[in-house]
Amino acid sequence: MKAPILVAVIWSAIALTGCNESPTDKLADRVETAGDKRADVIENNADALRDQATALDNRAEAVRDTAESRAAAIEAADMKVKNMTQKQRDAIVANQAPAVR
Image 1 (tube, rainbow, N blue to C red):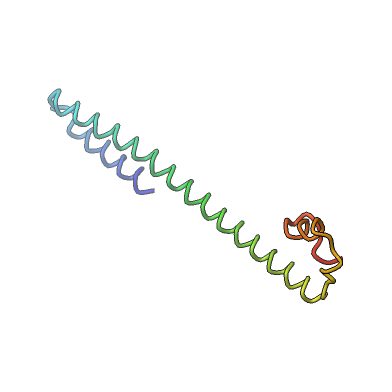
Image 2 (image 1 turned 60 degrees about the vertical axis):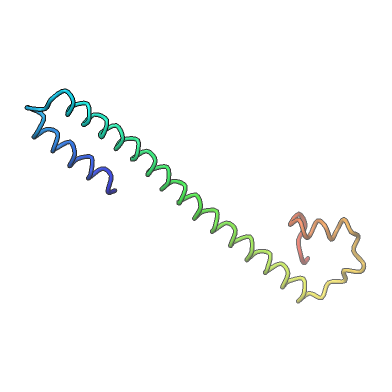
């Protein structure tokens, strides 16, 4: 949000001083403007990555909550784990089979 305001201020300053600028000043202004545009892209990418990180954190928390609920259900049901095959146990752990029926 800060970057677009900064770019607008820079453009305003360029417009006010643009009439009597030397070729050196014009080139310097162009370099600065191009740098600002590149910085804006980087900031936008950083914002998108922060949003993705937040979404991933939320998904991780949901997975933890689900695992905790499934574990509590297994304990509450006092499942006869000894009677299960290893394949059945693995399916429950992998979330491919219901924890309790």
